[in-house]
Image 1 (cartoon, rainbow, N blue to C red):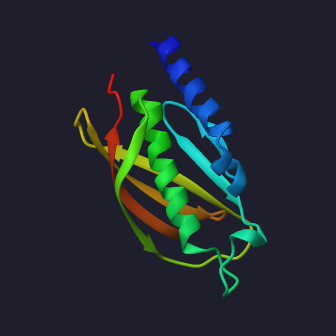
Image 2: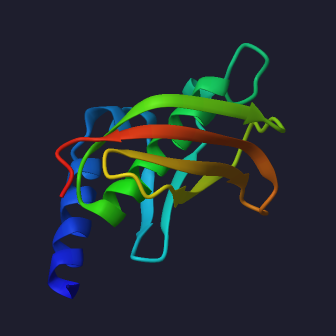
Length: 138
């Protein structure tokens, strides 16, 4: 089982590290283990809105991706987003943000999860939930 898990993690990490979209935004996959998946993003000027704070679309993208990364690391199959709901809690304009996810639901083809985005001090900035379709379930 351990070898299979390692293969899944390697596949997920490879897909992440070779994704043009992830690279464009500057995401960093800092942890990918059985227990946790952590995604970080240094805040750059290109990610700010007209008010000088992190654009809401960045929070949404990060939550969408942390939930799907966590699912993929658990089930070993790709997923696509069916529904995503985001709640914006607080703005940020510098430093970095950190995302974590929790997965639930026992369906073979449909999974659900929640994601949170925190600042470097652990302050909640945004949270969201989503429903995802499993592609080619194993």
